[in-house]
Amino acid sequence: MKDDEYYMQAAIILARKGIGYVSPNPLVGALIVKNGRVIGQGYHKRYGENHAEVNAINNAAEDVAGATLYVTLEPCCHQGKTPRCTERIVKSKIRNVVIGSVDSNPLVSCRGIHFLQKRGIKVKTGVLEQECRRLNEVFFHYMETGMPFVTIKYAQTLDGRIAAASGQSQWISSEASRKFAHKLRAEHDAVLIGTGTAINDNPELTVRLVRGRNPLRVVVDSGLKTPLKAKILQNLTAVKTLIATVKSPGNPQYKLIEASGAEVITIKKDGQGKVDLKKLFKTLALRGISSVLVEGGAQIITSTLKNNLACRLVTIIAPKIIGKGIEAVEDLQIRDLNHAQKLSFQKIRRCGPDIIIDSRFR
Image (cartoon, rainbow, N blue to C red; front, side, top):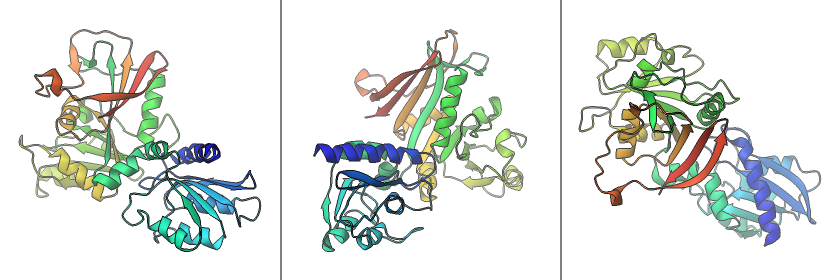
């Protein structure tokens, strides 16, 4: 059992190399062990390319017949952008397969395991299962709820302000923390802001300070007030932008924004006459967006929390005090502490002079 856990931990480390490149596919790592030696290893490198099991077999230093395959997620048994991994495993005459977690994709979900077992391969499941599920928390949430995994991220002062009373927010956090924020963008399929942030901060919402792909830029703009000169409406051939509004396609501003090259979609109104965030996130999920990074402002953050749409909260705390200013979260109408939204801290670390608290909603 200890050997199984040792090799599975190594497979998890391999899988993490695909962060930011494989979505909406899961992160998967694989090791092939024969006679107590690792003879092959691989991970899913990029969406649409070979899966981890195939890469491990292709990279093997010797014949894999009779070997044991360690893989963090149940091998696929359906034809997608790549061939079935289960068939390649059988063809390679691997004798044993040790799996970290079962795939909750309804196209797989134990079918891969049964396929292998029916062909005489011994299968063991549940090795470091919680660690493997944590590795793919985005994928599992997306598959099991039909909604994207939503992360809220903001930088604040020690006294809880995301901007001065004047609205100035650049820069509360340090350069090191801004680099971390760009890494977060690269790890999500989409990054989302409200109209106020688009107008006041005029962000590019691209990945520049680290290597990685640019997420889809989403602006929640109920009244279509985003200026045509805004940075998020530039460079649209390289980075896509989607504007979500309650206005109809016949609206003149709707047509002007579309003409700029951005996509505009109409989402039903919520009770306040604004874009219904739940419907918007569902629409994004149906488009294959498995994760969304909410970067602000306060109204969007508050609405996301009110609708219980957030899965993760990343708070960057800068060692600064400014007194009166703008709070990250507005009134959630919670009057009893027993009704407070509860979180669990997953990781707390220093980043330059700042502290980053990475937590999950219970």
